[in-house]
Image (cartoon, rainbow, N blue to C red; front, side):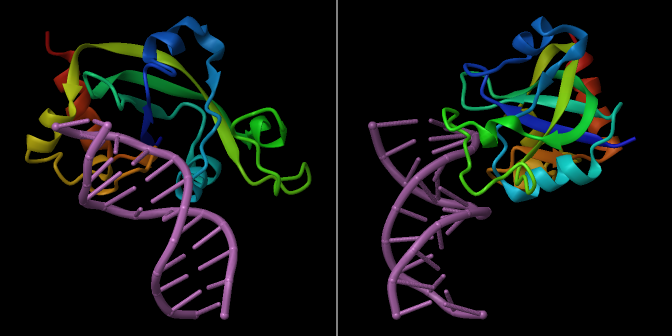
Length: 154
DNA sequence: GCCAACGTTGGC
DNA sequence: GCCAACGTTGGC
């Protein structure tokens, strides 16, 4: 099993929004970064756990956990001329962008803030900190569990 | 709203 | 293939 972290702007799509989607979850569409795409397309498996991070908002940090419920398939928004994510260079035979489906798993008792992660000696070098502007990234199991434990404190 | 980081595009 | 220009992300 692999562990991941995804970023989302809660004004756009929050963990509560994901929870409202139920067990079928939501297609994680709109990722237009090759490295993030490759992680989803090549390495994400059904059952993998995903830290859900809220970015560009008042309280930035990890708010809970999601689960991969469908492995990678072509992101349909790339074919839709009316979508903000439309890509004229993508065709049905040669899709460029992929998505997975993720579903709500749990919400933390307390936010694990970016500041907390930065100041934690074992977490300060994770990809969230060292790789700016990457919205889908792997996380070491040990780091996943530290963040989960921090979020479980009340 | 500012701006640093940095991935992508396109001219050459 | 280089690299300047440009656009986006995302913290503050």
